Amino acid sequence: MEVVKTVVLLTLMSVLFVWVGGMMGGTQGMMIALVLAGVMNFVSYFYSDTLVLRHYNAVPVTREAANGLYIIVERLSQKANLPLPQIYIIPDSVPNAFATGRNPSHAAVAVTEGLLQLLDDEEVEAVLAHELSHVRHYDILVGTIAATIAGAIGVIANMMQFGAMFGGSRENRPNPIVMIALAIILPLAAAVIQMAISRNREYMADEGSARLTAHPEWLQSALAKLSSYNAQGMVHEATPESAHMFIINPFAGKHISFASLFSTHPSTEDRIARLEELKFEIK
Image (cartoon, rainbow, N blue to C red; front, side):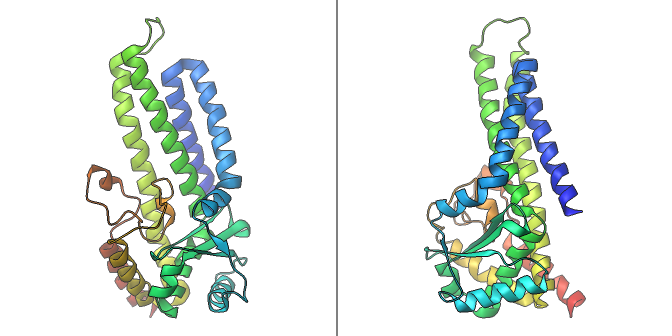
């Protein structure tokens, strides 16, 4: 069922992208957008995990190098009936974690050195259970491609605005006012879609962690610590394009702005409150 949901979401995002191309350049623009959507989906599907791990200088670890971490991931994978993912450590003092990979058979989990230093074993287990829940539901694939297409829509929207102001007087060119309006509305629509996808799946992964560990309080404690620490600093080289992957928004310490309305993460307070409700179901 999750595979079907994933395909539907990615198809809708691609259709939106192609429609934008059509609005900008007619049939030719639609065909160009269709090709670009195909290329972006291909690259995101097969190479997004490698690119993001390389970006954050993640180092693969073995059982011998990080036995405690390895045991936790192995135990959780068996409980979740998932293949053992590759395990990485990011050389960064700011505590955070993410999962990546196109499907459970090609997945990786990465934690920063700061996370291992800040959290106790139970909290680390809760964080890793959260990330494995993302893997189980193909969340990273959806989020990555949604972010890629949303970014591309933003680029095309800027081109539409530029074309509306400085384009020639072609008879088949869309109304300049319509193009400018779409140039403003479309990036916001894409951001809302990306936000909705990511926020909902964060709640789902939190619930998955609570049920997998049978201890919602472990994740509650971990989220409180991570949120407090990330309010003071952020992971080195963090980017808006990959922010949705982390368990805590790496830009949580940034000043509140209009852009924060489209944050890919729900508030830590809301997440902790939802976990509190789960205690009555799980225990």
